[in-house]
Length: 116
Image (cartoon, rainbow, N blue to C red; front, side, top):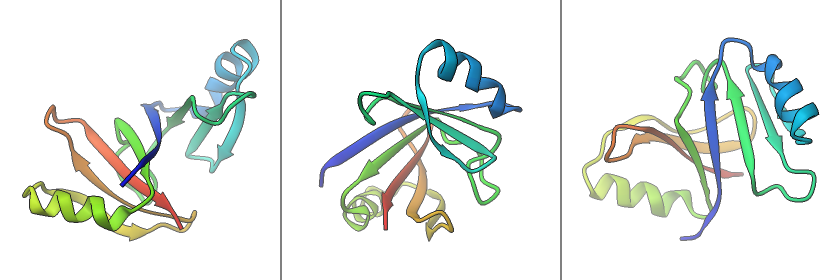
């Protein structure tokens, strides 16, 4: 299993208001805009990203962090084996990711995902 990407998520009532600061001021491009979530990425790299969201998608809470992996089933198996409660999913979402939510040891909601 390899972690491919980690995305910080910030809950906000109006994600659109982030465009000026993250886009205009910091020079980040909008990499994804689904209305309820805007994801900003560096013009030089897609590695540093920041998402501003009103929800986590499919009516879920905004996760504290999203981690993209190359083998979701492997990670899911480890989560189940560890006895951790899955709070959403696993599910294939309409925007093309398969994912589930779980809490880390500190209570943070983590979105584990892979692109299908």
